Image 1 (cartoon, one colour):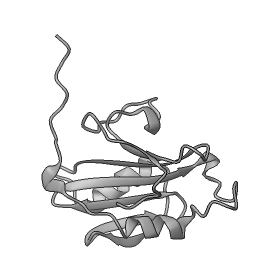
Image 2 (tube, one colour):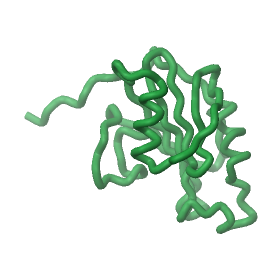
Image 3 (cartoon, rainbow, N blue to C red):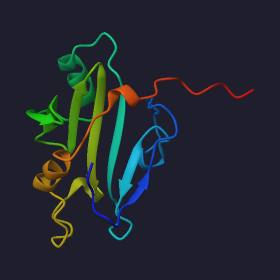
Image 4 (cartoon, rainbow, N blue to C red):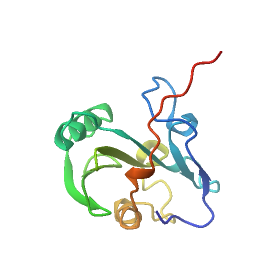
Length: 146
């Protein structure tokens, strides 16, 4: 995906699992893109196999966990997706894998800094640059500490 040149990048170091109480910016299972010069602005990208779930069931589960009550269809890299109308999330599935892409701004208030154009239109422009490679995903769980 394309993102502003000055943003910091941190790749996930572990498979994504639910980690209650761990904020996304500290979760080792989430790829993070952040604007070091704008407080509390980041994008989080994470994925997992959807197992036996249908894409619709997986979307519904992800939306519920993130308190997104309404979404609209979106295509990301040619894959089936949903984008929140009341949240800053996009949910995409392809080849048995689900992806969550989050644009976060302090308090989710995009009017906080009118000079920063990080609104839904900007988010959709970034989503248009996403390339998905589910065949490269690593689904192994971390090994237990000896």
